[in-house]
Length: 103
Length: 287
Image (cartoon, rainbow over all chains, first blue to last red; front, side, top):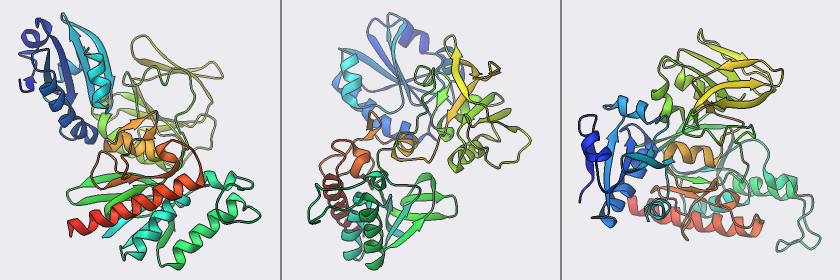
């Protein structure tokens, strides 16, 4: 499964009502560390296919989502389980560190 | 354009330059402030000195050696590094330099101030990157912790975004900066507080300052500060490198104490040499 583009319209259906665990990468195009994070997120999506849903939220276009989930630094990664944020990572992280938290 | 800019003039940085310069690469070393090496009173566990050598002497000899080989060595403070389409721009307090590659050899100085609440609120109002996170603080009241050129540089990134910026020097001498929406508070900080996010700073004199966010720009920016801005992987503030001293960003290398491990001259010299050799390969492949 490829990485989903998540926005204010589909957030509820794709993330909050998801039966699978969901990993969301909050990013912006102008943020250097986000650009380095992005390929790592793509790899995670590939490796966790069928187990974890992976999506990206562009904070420029979806400011309300950033505000709602208290995203004030990017990249921020939030993991949702049953519609609730259960874990977050701020700043660029190693792939294994994120994978460990999805187990 | 330089082939390589090395940040730091200790054993790692200078060793890297010995290789790149002798391979005819256009090499620039930029350094500022004291090196950790200068604090070593007598080094008796490094090869080739019958009676040992003081850290200060070894450090000075290294810079002289680099210069004698024709490497430019500048005492300037690096305040920002930007990724460009072809290489990087290194911005100092005096100038801007373009380069194909960067080697971090900045030592292991840690800049994060030991103020209660800072670690706890990382990403919840505490930020280390004005360029990345300034966006979240449009028309808000923010603080910048720091007192040097780096703090000024971060403040300038925020000046047109924020409503009001307060530079908190935490007891240090106030920097020179003039702007309508910037003020300076030189008081000692006791704690950063808030419920789920940063809400206020409390000073040692019991006064408080309400803020929406705080940008940390303490001291002289080193590898871990630039790592946060550029997106270089770190592990407990040490730069993560592979066996070729490459970071996760192509063209950026790190060596010496800033990569962690044993803080020894021998290790820094090895890593510097390795980084230098790898940069030579990288630059030649690009040409």
